[in-house]
Length: 130
Image: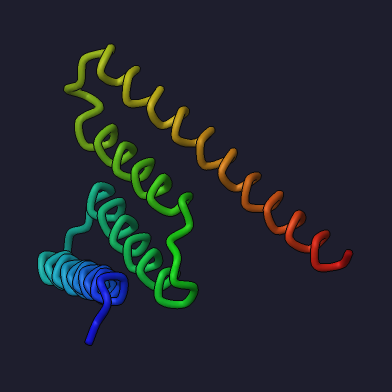
């Protein structure tokens, strides 16, 4: 029978596959709608980019059995950029400032996490060489 850990891992994989397939199908539908209406707007491109990042995150998980922390951060940055582009003209200055500050904070977090990954790899290599 399955252990709790195996069942948990299988459930996680199933959910991630459903998310990946859902993002792929939704992206195809959005592309088809844009082509059939002969119109594509910047917010639709941002949405497609978010779908691509989600599909990439699922792909990264399936190849390495772990999700790099920077990918969800980048997805959040893209989503905030999409909000600013969509509502930028009608948005209050403080809300715009808050969302811009959030992008800056998330960018810093992604940079720090990428440095952490590089340092971890260097540390692992130094232990293997010793």
